[in-house]
Image 1 (spheres, rainbow, N blue to C red):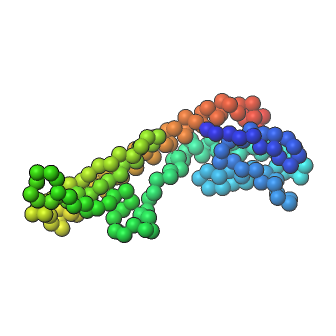
Image 2 (cartoon, rainbow, N blue to C red):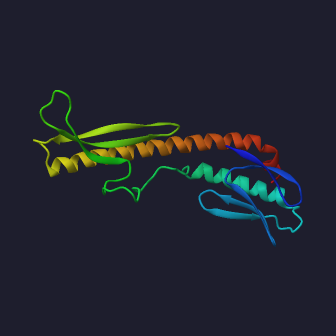
Image 3 (cartoon, rainbow, N blue to C red):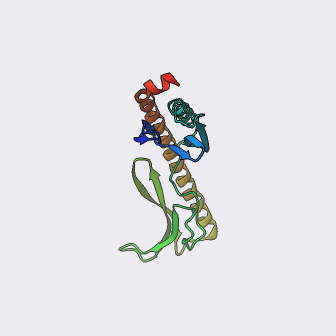
Length: 182
């Protein structure tokens, strides 16, 4: 997990994991956790003396949330506003094409399958030819396309969560000195 060096208003420097932000505003001094919701861990002091303890508490809460919550996902869950069809996100079509050597056109859906840490795959879900195309076949193909996309999204989410939890273990080891004092 990424960390950064943060200097607070007193000049003291801390190594801070991503998802934790420093808040120093008027009478508010503390660390804000932004993972699975927000929570402020106050220094309980105006001079910054409680910053180390507050950061330790925020980091412990971050590690707890990573261990229990799924990783945040950047996958699009709803179709883009610009999408002109009412198909779910990651599914487009029907695409009509005529293959070389064929006398009839065929129709299919294009499905984008996300893969965590890798490029997405493109898959085609066959509907039928211009002679066999029916509303029922369209609906069945759409259901298969949606199921394919949902399965890929679930695998993506599992892989993202597994990776985030592995990063949290590394972070826990890196910040052992801070966490031991909290």
